[in-house]
Length: 247
Image (tube, rainbow, N blue to C red; front, side):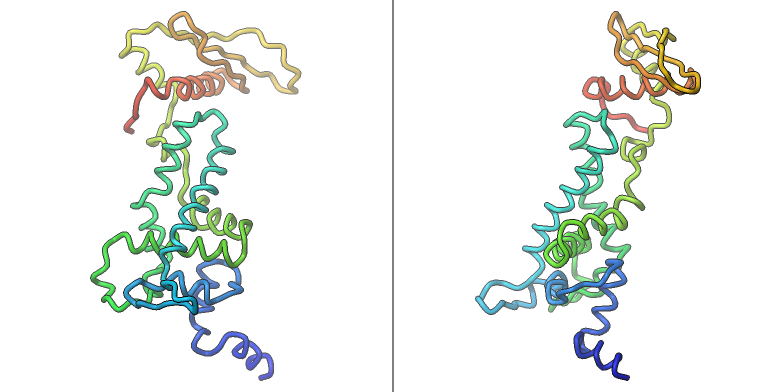
């Protein structure tokens, strides 16, 4: 009984359900519940803080948008070392698109926690993504960058960020490169060359020449893998000229 009264003393009964719901969404305990309450306050409530400033989720949404962009950028930077600035920007835009954020907000059931004087049926689709961003902002203010990164990694990156799908479901870079060369009437050649590596297992070294220029080199445990690896590097090098691929 003492333990129960302690819990409800630190989180009043009116906050009990909200605390448990937020904990389930986050995957860890919130510290300052009031910050999360603000993340679900719609401007129609017309609330103000003690200094007379508007009290709703919009400022948290601004902060969450910045945090989301930063953490997704860091992930893409590490995962796709071949990608140039234009490629990385394009991939990030796909992850943090309004449509995708709306889906994330829906999947987490955030709308049910929103406090508003407007019937929820009157909201547009973007309310889901807006509240999701506000929640990310609240996590950053409450628990700092590392918890914010943990949440985005577990709730966004792991379940939703698939680099190949974001690229347009590219299955074979070699086929894309060959297709492009044929359309552009450019000669191409995959050539196995001598590479004295010190690997325990035999490796194949392949260089891809397009026209008179060596576009990429790669090494792998099979000729096929080395060709695909070289093709992927060439694909990124030719990104601007190859244009979007639909698959």
